[in-house]
Image (cartoon, rainbow, N blue to C red; front, top):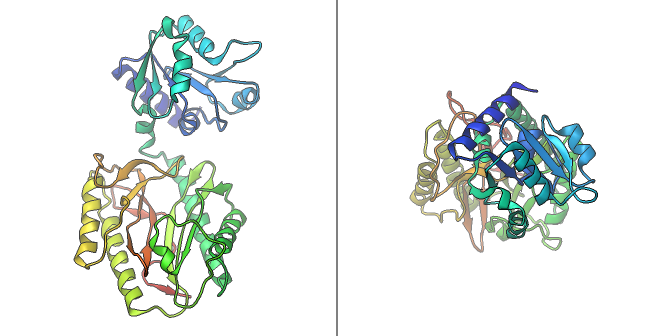
Length: 363
């Protein structure tokens, strides 16, 4: 077992003890992967920190046995009892009196099923003890995130010569995704955003097959690559042809705000304060502020804590990986977003996405 896995188990055990819990039912797929390396779904991981059990049906028992670092794999359904009975049986054997569940992930239907057998133990809602552990990334995780970012960078570099007048947003998005696979991605981090012209003012525009690229259009691309379970996230904005003075103004203001946010990403910095700083820079330029948050954590999930925005109550810490992605969106004109995946270190922030952003690229 890797040293980091042992530390995670010890830390989880302490977190459960602090909550006066004997064990935790983990249903979030990313948390199961973090704790055990299991890449399946629709399973239940019961863990005390010291001992763990993966409760799975026959689709995942063999996979679980191969992938899990320490969990014993227990099959439910015929000829075994349903998963709630299996959990109750383990709880009785291990004398677990108080078992937590992930309150932000377990469905109400699953909760009702667990209650059928919970007379033998107390079932209690728990916050995010595994997510707490996932905030700071290990050296092994950072290496995978670096690779995911490098794949995205390489795909974008390969894409630029292929951009041509008359191609659709959807065609460009699919070409970019294909290039990520060619560069070594095992998947895409999320549905690629490709928006041309005035449609680039929509932060999460869905690529259209009917919107065709023409001279003078903004091209906004927001995408990421998946590598060994870890995600990258990057946004770059271009102009197809010669940029207008207005486009240059919007781009320059977005870049200045993005750099200000990036430079403020230091250990101990408030996520809310950085977001306020960046919004202030955009306001000074007399342009509309973005409607979304400044950024979010990136790891086994594309969106994970911390979520840096007006309501953020968390501070950054060394080894976190977060995005910095302010945008300026002007309905009817278009928008610019510039985003990097950023590693927070004691020596200052490091952009893991390296594709140039220091000037408005005219294609």
